[in-house]
Image (cartoon, rainbow over all chains, first blue to last red; front, side, top):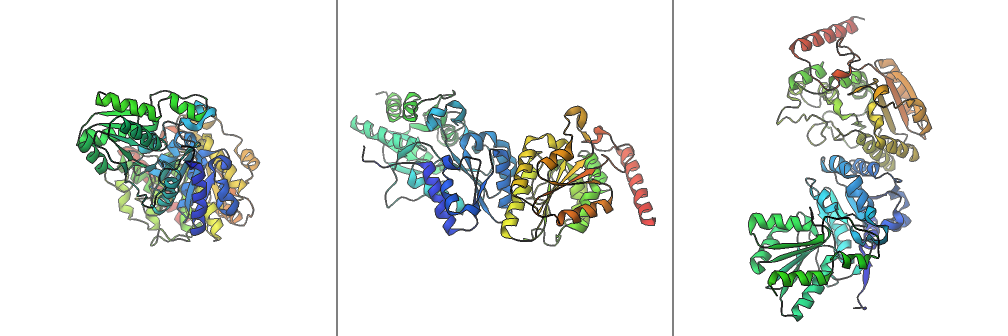
Amino acid sequence: MSEIRKVATRDSYGAALVELGREHPDVIVLDADLAGATKTGVFKKEFPDRHINCGIAEANMMCVAGGLSTVGYVPFASTFAMFAAGRAFEQVRNTIGYPHLNVKIGATHGGISVGEDGASHQCNEDFATMRSIPGMVVICPSDDIEARAAVKAAYEHVGPVYMRFGRMAVPVINDNPGYKFELGKGIALRDGADITIVATGLMVAEALEAAESLAGEGIDAQVINIHTIKPIDEELLISAAKKTGKIITAEEHSIIGGLGEAVCSVLSENYPVPVKRIGINDEFGHSGPAAALLKQFGLCSENIAKTAKEMLGR
Amino acid sequence: MGIIESTYHAKAGHPGGSLSSAEVLTYLYFREMNIDPENPKMDNRDRFVLSKGHCTPGLYSVLAYRGFFPVEDLKTFRHIDSYLQGHPSMTSVPGVDMSTGSLGQGISTACGMALGLKKRGGPERVYALLGDGELQEGQVWEALMFGAHYSLDNLCVIIDNNNLQIDGAITDVMSPYPIREKLEAFGYSVIEVDGHSFEELEQAFNTARNTKGKPTAILMKTIKGKGVSFMENKAAWHGKAPNDEEYMTAIRELSQAASSEVTK
């Protein structure tokens, strides 16, 4: 395990922006006094004229991005998830979502893996608020490879996109030549017949680990990576429900309004099967080391495996 | 008159603030701005953002009379299935450069447009019209800071100082005064004008165009409901449509004023 390369997806975001910036002169990056943390600082280093610091004023930043998008730029508005999807929700809804402007929101520090900063900065509600905006694409990549691909796909997509990145370094799991990022398409990472684990973000690696340990106990778990939470890959979810008949969802987000509820919506209307949601159980986080918090809140392979066994009566 | 027509037929809307902005909207669209009603998305056009988005009857009337869409359509304002939405919608109304309605956000988008156009290096200018009550929104001051910080001299912020908001006088609800001093402290070149005088507006916009290195704020003293006796200076006419009798009186007064303007 110690051999596995780990990268925080916020670093991937910064690196991908630089690559995009080299290729596309219309890419412009906005930040709200967090360039060092969101990693847009690396873009600023290479393209100082295309990096706009908006100061600690996220509401203004989102609308400035909206304005820029109408005069030929593709803005990437960057801040912590808490401020992008929380504080500036109404700006994103009215000024970016309603006119369907071509603005990309790079939200770093999503979820409780923010760690020591505590509940005020641990955004577990961003999928919920962003999903509720008509026309908004919501992406939560699982690792470095996927995060870089997501940033490029977001650029190619015309319309608003919300991308959630993490602070903590996570294992690189998609480093294979066959990997392909398709907006709105889930990826079946592991085949299985007994139960399906549908995960997003850093929970995908945990799901794979859980499936590995379940295999040791004779349980054959399918693993699906949903990097695009909206629009969600209905076809893949329905086929999984038909195949295994039992679903676990796993996300670093409140069980309210996130991946779990999105999956439940698809299945209850198309092919109802039992679903268990693993996520933050309608509570706030608190300070602590990220890895320890994830374990404490049950966002780990052990809890996924335990839940699977419970669902299978084993 | 389009303002009265549209709010009368919609049986809703915001006539008061639209009338206080009627002259500046007319001046912008008929004199000041480089625009083409035949080509509303012309890339090198000047941009206008109605940050006080509720004054849609004013903006739509001017756009219609300028030729962006048929004047007749003003009667469908706020009706179900009409493209003339209650607040400006850039995706459905030709000539609308930004969807607005939620106060404080328009000026930020104008800053984004001005910054982008400046970076492109063209001569295009951006105009944003705000209400004085709107100054109570904290985001306005974030945007004002941004405009000055990036020396957006192609940005012209216009404040319609009619002194009234929904709940009453702005001084009673939450005073934004002293407005001029605040704008100056934020780094703006401030010009105070009578917002109902085309001569003063012309001078102000000429000065704004020639001011380099900082944005301009035009502080317009205006009368809410201007030109309709029973609406003037009445907060009640912020968001209410005239009834049949009021409609006839308003149209008569505005027509008389228009014909006396012509004979003058």
